[in-house]
Image (cartoon, helix red, strand yellow):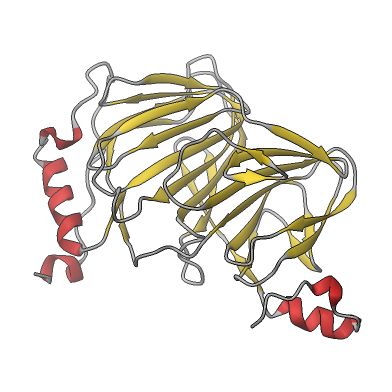
Amino acid sequence: MTNTNYTEISNSDDCEKYVNQYIQDFQIRSAEIGKGTVIKRALPSRQKRMIGAWCFLDHAGPVVFPQGDGLDVGPHPHIGLQTFTWMIEGTMMHTDSIGSKQLIRPKQVNLMTAGHGISHTEVAPDTETHMHAAQLWIALPDNKINMPPQFDHYPELPVVEQDNIEFTVLVGEFLQTKSPVKVHSELLGVDLTAKESTTTRIQLNPKYEYGFLALEGTATIHGHELDDNNLVVLEPGLTEIEVQLHAGSRLLLLGGEPFESPILLWWNFVGRTQEELKIARDQWVNQDQRFGNIPDYEGPRLEAPVLPDSMRASK
């Protein structure tokens, strides 16, 4: 397929056929975590495993809860990835095994690079009663997969306004505006919030694949309806797309070049071989210092799930 700009196609029927061959629409699944917190998992799915290096996407909330009943995720490990939290409403305390302790507030990003190995907790303060966030993982490329762990907090992200939409540039470059968030692959992440009902055309990199997720309200992506129950995916090849948003709607746009290597994602680990994942699990179970510890957390560590038969049998 060529990278033709679809606005140059004169026949409207041909234009629709051209664009629609690049667009897919997937239902996403829901689950409940903690005490009544509903998450909707868009990645990975059977239909779509990754968007660029983005390999995991949970939409958590919005939820209201009594004080003291917020999310409380005990110590758990990660390897081979970056965790990326975009907070929309509420607050959450991040604590990790390399000594980081950071409260994240709305319109802020926490980025934890697991690399060779790290553990962390995520706990809502006792006074908190709201939560709404997007939690994502980014697979590290082959040359960074075992890098030393680190943590970065980004209290302010650049914002650009166009077509009555507030674009917050979370990752990468958009509308000639660059995010300070440090990632290790060619990626894009943008929060789109409509001040009123509007239509815009988003310029795309034809080398990238993209995904749209509704965080609030609804939208239409070139005729494809988007709400909080589906993910609209664009395969590489397009140079722009038309997006219609209703007043107050908020979308998450992700993009990136297709990832360089096949990955394996199991539990909280991203690796390349089953042996890597088995070793990491054993080290967590045996409390190996690879994952450190979080001494000020009062509660048990998360237990690793049992390995699937296919992994236990592999050599």
